[in-house]
Amino acid sequence: MSDEIRKISSGGPWEERFGYSRAVELPGGLVLVAGCTSVTNGRIDEGGPYEQTVAAFGVAFKALEALGLGRTDVVRTRMYITHARDVDDVGRAHKELFDDVRPAASMLIVSGFVDPSLVVEVEVEAYRGGSGS
Image (cartoon, rainbow, N blue to C red; front, side):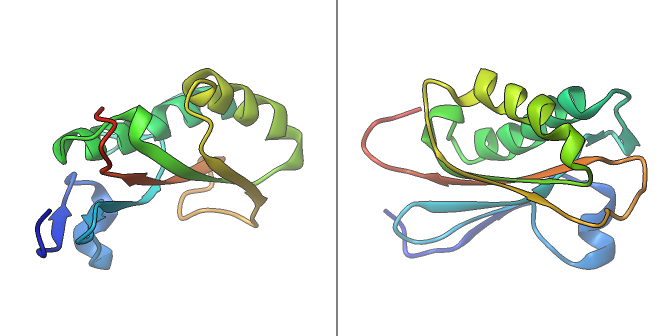
């Protein structure tokens, strides 16, 4: 494994504006993916909490793919939601995506996001281990 820190940009609208990377791979194989929302191609994908969760994880998966990793390399997820009523929809999307992976996971209720039409944001941590993608 390299001793170099690798950084990936997705070209998302806030990365350049706020000065962050979509994903950072640390020496030793830990990959941290920044908070992802359902924004693709500069636009918020339509849909409710379930659809936004699937789309947000899709953004995270693209960042992992750029580093040669995939969904099965995910070891931790965090889901931030704006309403307790969305717990079941967000949880259902998470289960469908990760039921066979079973990462450590947290779901937290927050007061809001940079755009009020967003109802969920996700973070992903992955590990480049010997299991492969």
